[in-house]
Length: 220
Figure 1: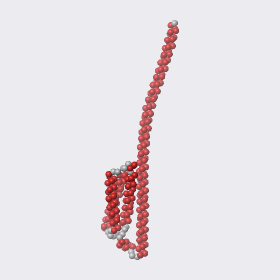
Figure 2: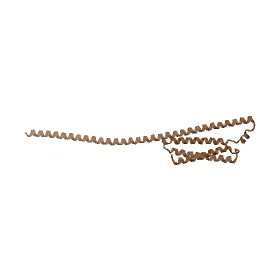
Figure 3: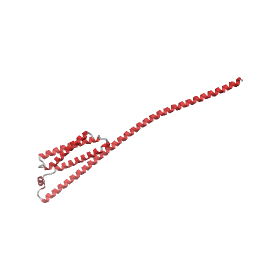
Figure 4: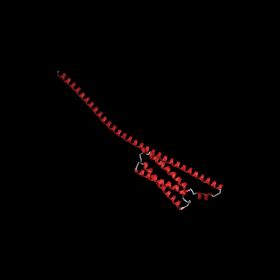
């Protein structure tokens, strides 16, 4: 793992801890429109963007790690991204949280109306939670799909390299076979030439013997 990744990881841990602390303070601030609360919300929004940028940098560093060692870091990145989704969901809930005084003003003192409105708010909150969970699940699927795609591309790249090496070996084999074929052809040519020479010499010797016998009998 590179030193850059470790640095990003440490910065991310410190940043998310501070975000969590601030998110917990937002509902306790007086009034939904107070300047202090607005400033706190703006600060958290900025920190969330910084955390996302850190995650992107960490993700790039993980992609540079060899495939055989990447699994553990991919799991850590998946955990960090889940943590980020949870922080964003907590932040959204904290922004709509009110103090008891503001909530009473909104709901009123009437018992039946108050209970109905409270139930309605709870129902909306549950819907938001379900939507957040569905978004988180969709994001998780997208991350896993991206990882699978990267693995497939890496496998295809490895297969392409193997095919290229096999082609190089075939070319070398063809070259060696060509050289061997030329050598064998030359040897065969020399063998044929030697046999023709022996055959011609044999004929000359036979003719010489016949002539010697002929002149021998003629002399007598």
